[in-house]
View 1: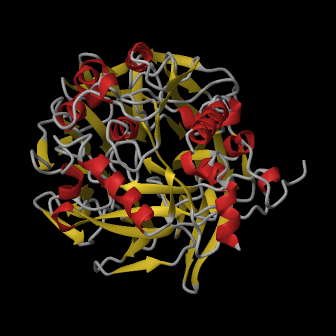
View 2: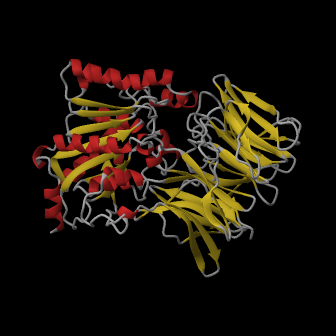
View 3: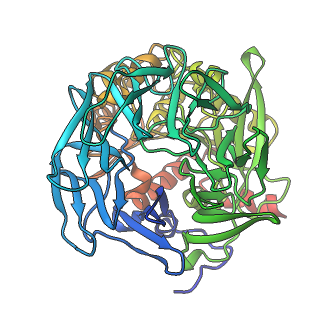
Length: 610
């Protein structure tokens, strides 16, 4: 298959096909494992394995989707010990014996955060009534044993020397708001003893416990205002190294590993500051040094392999890849184990971003990543798509996004906004959107758009806003205002926060309750701009009926809109088999409302590049 011409627009099919994602990078039996998801394969995750001297290969199981639905967002969905694969998928927990092909159902139920230790498999099991910490012996009768249960939530069961550590948060909290870390005596085959709380509380999030080679318990806590690394020696917890950055990702999923221990005694961890990630090495004295890598985005799956570290990382010119960084005395040496490659996009010029900082009310600063039209010169002027990220505790990602390049290759500029509530700016910033959702996030996106208009970058009448999930709610409320946006696209959008709080999975109910109270429900009669609604028919996070109801109300009022329902698609449209159709619909939507640009953003690109 030949490559596309360097100046040809990127097709939706190619943008989707190139959007491969990697997740859950872990080490078992001396091998690296991860899940690889390809949208053009229907979004199913494939287990991959890399072993020194053998390279990378598909590790199966065939025709089986490994994926956890625990806490709605999953995580920690497989483990390997002595060649036996333990994994979760539709139906429950399964085992595949070494050398075999058949999967054996061990236990039904919704499970995740699988970890092996003390001769057992430990996991979190969820029901509508609450969570359980469970254990299964690796040999002998395969019976699931309940270690603890709660109406709240468990995470990170981590066995150590005669102890078990875990995290817990109540049904009234999210783990990034109030999460506690507990430790109790534990023996394989038995129960747990009297637990002791190590850290966490109403105003502290303590996450990612991990036993160190020194026998101490390490964890991340945001008691300083940033998630930083701490060490508990059985008596007290002390900071390992203070960093003005987030040393852990916001815990939407179970099984995250933002740090690990190298064989030479150093600790390696990923740190986020704004939209950028970097890798930090901490020596036993607490001194920290940065590792110079060609990456700006690192997923929360850091896995030490001797004195090397495996990462899922990317940059504005490199799509996500699995890499092994050998930390030598002469500097890091990279070995790429897997990368997203698509022949038709080989050698393509891509748009790379610049950081934009805009002052808003209360002398606060909003950061945005501005991707100019591909090939545009320094004086570019173009139609602009402002993107409100989902979450809203997520953040802009400084990495190659082929679906953004789909638009920049057609003359649009794409602008990602780290609005109030985003991660990467400390706890206070993250919490500030509570009760202000649909207000301050909209204001931040609007301020960035207005700045681009005032400075002559954006074309009047050609500025749009789009968002997915919580970002879709932001985009819809932006469409209720006069101002810079000519039209809005809302994908998998939340429409009514009050109703959402009753329909959302139990994990996120506390989030819904804390966020609401700002702009409230999106009312059809308040919408002043054309909207495109894109929604999967089996979305388990944002009910499709809300999108249908809003579209019906807009129809009755004669207000311009479109509704694209994607049959069989869940909450993640961008990684589904229908992602291409969604991109084409979004492009057509913007072109139909281009205003001054007359439906042809390319005329501005040509002027900008001259």
